[in-house]
Image 1 (spheres, rainbow, N blue to C red):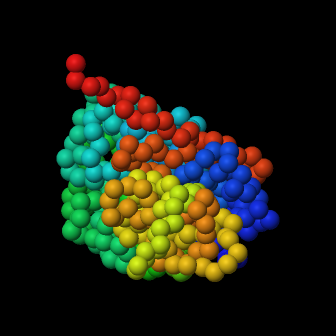
Image 2 (image 1 turned 135 degrees about the horizontal axis):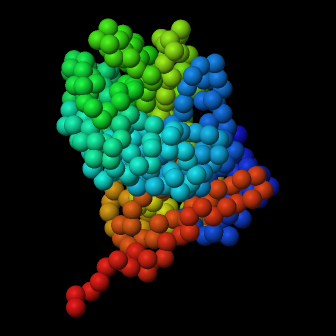
Length: 420
Ligand SMILES: *Cc1c(COP(=O)(O)O)cnc(C)c1O
């Protein structure tokens, strides 16, 4: 067995793999499969790495809720004093339900509705990250109706290439996010003239699964240049939000440690008093979770052997969507020789695969763990094929908390009705 898993709290034990010392086999027995399993220690260690790297400056870490919005996960971060980056009113409701502090919430996204703005203003969030001129005007109007001043930052598009997957790069000129750099000064002046807005910061987010700190440092330089121009225009900002995007190891990637990723950024802003905000999602939760699934059938073939498991693309969409790689390990490998398998689910789509060409020594009924599934796993799941969503559990030392019950089939169509 490989000693060094991307999920840091996963270890081989006497009864097979254990997370924080709890056997995955015990979890499967107790909660069934497929089940997402998270490690509280891994979440907390991840957050602590950000905190310690930022210890010597005014900074706020806002966990990007969209990566994993389970209340158990959110409450773990809330108790550590984290801020939150949200992209919908629904995510705001989750943060509040989990005990998060509205005053540490930043609201991103290109399509905030009037209702979402109202909800966030009433909750008293820290900042709206505004992405267009039309949104500036809408936010001003909504704040005016409520007799409030809305704190805002403009999300600018620094046009740097993050060298990542095209679907998850967001900071290039030709995509829908943020406003063009050249437009930013004009829009800031416009925002500063609106009576119901308080211009408080600037934001950028260049992409996801970044493995090289250089593009982020380049974006930071550009943002700083803009901050200085704005100061010359009489617009003083209180915070600079550098977004999320730090990558994790899925296979053989070698992402920088948080401190190494942040060091060049901190150098860019050395001696400045603005608060620095970050919005990490994947890097906080990705390797704090795995998807536990059971092999239903082994299906040997002429060209390929299939392992048909009880999880599918509706549970973990990343392989089908981005051709993403998740390490697959047998919880308790069989004695005997490995064979090469495609790991597929029961869904009626050829695209329903979880992994290709994996060497495993397994038998029907065995458990597999798909690693690095804590981010954009459950959060992107669906009920395709009327499949109830997986349960979610959080291992917390000796305890295992059920943080989301497995859905029932009846609940899936509870909101529907046959024709009268
Ligand atoms: C998705 C997103 C994040 C989080 O990205 P990760 O790659 O998960 O760190 C942060 N900020 C914004 C604006 C986002 O859209």
